[in-house]
Image: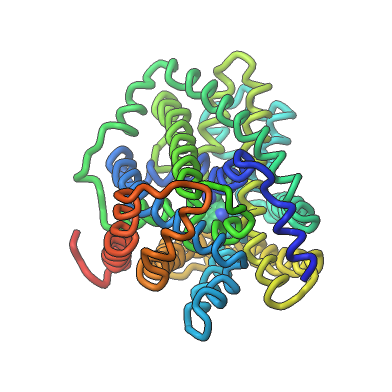
Length: 455
Ligand code: TRP
């Protein structure tokens, strides 16, 4: 027990620390790798606008709800429902979150491993003097080769384990405070380079000029799924972190700041990538390889590209690390507090299980490519099921729990710690979390998986 309470004391020593850690969780591969490529796959600006709508109307209220559940209970995702809703099935929502955490981290580690490999490639100057086709081949050959990607994936998982194993306190808070601002600076530098490329206008138009006729039901579902994924919502990451936030913190303000930071970085990543995609004649819908193929093209063109390419993939790795830690922490906090397994052992057990699932994800890019379910390989299946099904479902339950089970008075009580509650904002929040979020999630979800049919 003492370990549990000492953990709570250690983490998040300042307001900026809270934001940096939560933004560290939110900003990750989702923003820089996944957002640009799914925006490409689903047709560009129209997808972006739907995504932004979901961020404001659903993402922000759900984030605040997760913080409320976390701080109010002071527990892991399972323990939180157990203590706030004793003797009820609500704790099953916690189990759903644990499943999502395992699935997400499994494929997340694979992509983060690619990112480490690209740091190495950048250092050895492998991008230089290659044309877009060669860069594209280099990527495909790499992810299909059975061993190297697995080694890098395991390396990344070990890094994640090492940090979570000693507790996230000083390490993660400190890293996040330095590396997040640096990441922003780098993306802006890349943006400037990208928008000054010949033919950049096409890319910006693709990103900002919506053609809603291109939007499909699956695109809308993916926009919702990605809003959850990018903000780290729907499975209890921010419930877990919320438990480490002290009562002097203004939760609403923190939620707004984290949401804004996450969204801005995603858009900046899009601006860095799409102009280059169009300028170099790469398909915007080329999928998961998009950033690994287009950015090396950009680096070749820019002064100091060698240096910036190293820094970029290093920071992509670090951004992934501050996110993967937050995902692993969900599982570890559960093992530690509910199953009373000591932190170190809990960390090792969860890392091993998740890494094994991850190896299959990695292999499904190459030697296991033929094994498909619903036309998706194992990697895409875990990504799709977790982001588009488990996270929205988790978000639905979280909004019902806070809007209906806890209700306005308890929400007000929690939010008045560390801030003065503005009456009309509280009413807006309650309205969004009670009606708008659950109804919208339910409709988009049922429509997206084809049970009802609006579009
Ligand atoms: N938000 C992170 C990203 O964009 C990934 C992540 C961390 C996550 N914690 C999560 C995704 C919880 C879903 C749920 O890369």
